[in-house]
Amino acid sequence: MLFDIHPKETIDSLYGRDDDLSHLINHIENRRWIAILGTRMVGKTSLLKAGKSKIEQKKIPVLYINLWGVSSIKGLLGGIVYAINDSLNPVKKFKRYFNQINGIQVGPLGITIEKRKEPLSLTSEILSVLGNNIDELVIMLDEVQELQYVTAHLVKLLANIFATLPNITFCFTGSYFGLVKSLLEPRFDSPLYGRSPARISIRPFIRDVSSNFLIAGFSENNLRILEKDCDEVVDKFNGIPGWLTLYGNAVVISRLSHEDALKYVEKEAFKIQRSVIKHYLEGRNSKLHMTILRAVAAQSTWADLKGSVKAVTGKTINDATLKNIIDALTSSFLIEKTNSIYHTIDPVLRRFLLRGNLI
Image 1 (tube, rainbow, N blue to C red):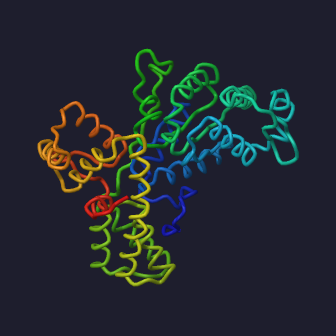
Image 2 (image 1 turned 120 degrees about the horizontal axis):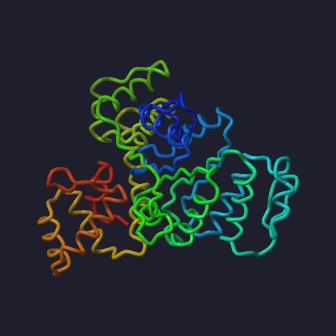
Image 3 (image 1 turned 90 degrees about the horizontal axis):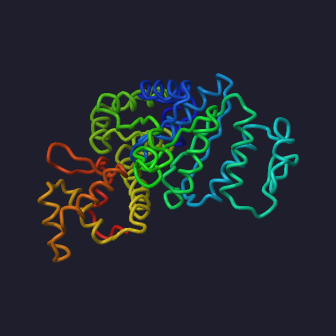
């Protein structure tokens, strides 16, 4: 169902992403690592999970790990163990191999971590067992930028897998900073230099696709959406599939009126944007980044941004610092530049930033 607010799980439920899905499957079939990039609620996870469904139809095992809120190797290890138990039936297939790993026990419900052991080493050993005993394996790491604080460790682990276990293919989703940037733009001294994943950048729907998505979703439920209502929704949410879906769900499932559904979506979207901004600001100069973000929300040139910083802080920001902040915001898919104007990608984020008392 198009208006199901959960990430789409199947090819049939994925709307408007045929080319992206085709690219994803083609890369996986050719054992090319790939990164799916895009703003929140644009459909990265849905594309990944639909790809998972398609790959599993080909009898290729897939491990899907959601890393949102995970910031350590230990958390990654836990996600891998959960995915193995959920997808691979380790009791039947790999018991004798996993039992040889110090710190791992295989019981009736799958593998468990029994002894304290360095998580990175244990993760490497587990993946080695899988890579040496499965003809082909796909590992999907969703929101991999969450592991940015352990980037150096992960890069070494991934480089070793790339070099020694060619039957393991990784798919990543995330914002373009931290670990993702190290994967896609490795330095010449990085063990991943020359081994960058391919990339798919997920864009919001164009206007016609947004309108057709809404029409199709209502049609699934034997309903029609008025043309003026459809236009207003598209104008307000600018092709972000997550917001369009939430609106459709509010009208079709919760039976809200058009006006109440718009208010509901805006309220829920603001909650998510608040979380996104808080997450982005962690470890950064909050006042400076928020000043620039708000200026971008008002649609600004480079000179406008410098003027806004001067007006708020009383200080002149140098070009290098401003460029670094703009690059970070762009890489996080919060903003983009069209011609000479910087603006937010998501109109909901724009409205959120232009309010007072954000965080």
